[in-house]
Length: 121
Image (cartoon, rainbow, N blue to C red; front, side, top):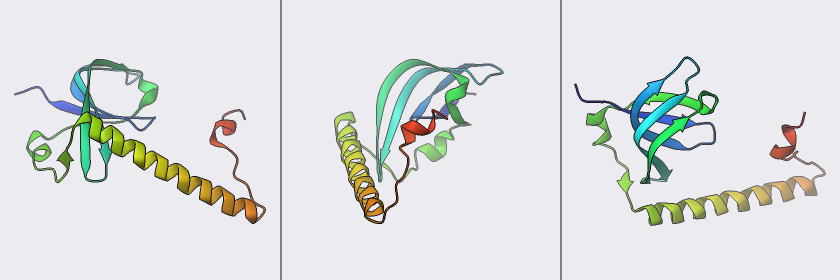
């Protein structure tokens, strides 16, 4: 049987795909021939990362990839530069939408605590 690729979803939202070489009781992982896959809409791009060590506390999901179904994906693979540009545009759009939301709440006398201040309590 061929070595199976695994998908790892990290706590910070990144998606890694590679060959699982080691795992322990804390879900610490070692991935080999790893790529970081970035999805934007119906497009995706892979950034080569090589050997990747992940601490278990950062693992949200770990799963085996079905090679046959991976080749049938409706997503379009694009270059690293193109997917990074698409990702930048998507992040800017999200930031603008968040600013509009915060402004609308301020006008109504409401406020949302910033996410970075929530960890202090």
